[in-house]
Image: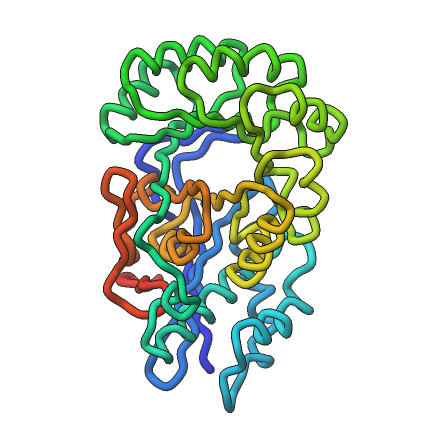
Length: 340
């Protein structure tokens, strides 16, 4: 098996601001695994908030190059188990890119899309939201008008968050989700939630800091809107930890280490009675095409990363007014069209 590493700097269509940072470009690493004329692709983005850089990911992947299969392809579950011994430490973004590339290659060698290999029915998939980052109300409204969607995820964390939702509601009848990215207190969340519910908000994502467990326990009991874990749920071991404190979890492939652990996390969440969402980073179509394979298993999805960047490097799934359209290709359906 041959591994190639491609790195790109993807321009964002707009400055993207959340509680932690603002940025105008997104560096990303694409892993290509080749075997007998077929190539699989996976992706991981540079994320300073988690201490993840392109250089660090490349060094991690170079360290396992000699361990890649050379004779036969093991099942992706066995491949992940083997590679995770070396790449699961710290934040497993590089492991995610490798795992997704391997699953993509596996699907291509079997000439089936992954959702077909997994026996999933794609006829009732959830639609994706479109994310509106923190900005002035005028800019947020202009972004909504530029991208009319039936479902928006609104990034909050200011001292006038309810007023922002009130202003946006005047412009659209779309459903809203709000993501506070750990910026609120218990009291703020309980005070905001009734009004947000009246304004057509579906749920609140991670209002409190990740380690405020007692506060989140209170929110699960008292908040009128469902609370979804994001920063509190990163690895597989976090799912059971989150169950008493949240109504659902948001799984991100890069944070947990790829499709392999994500499938296990989804199964575990279902057993615990949790709603399941999969989210994205600001990634290209390669990363979003992998998420699309999981859609039949999900209640909610936030996979608009490929709409937030100027993606001229890849092809795969397309998104039409929130509806995900699959590529007529095996694996994840993604391919790299520009090499870096």
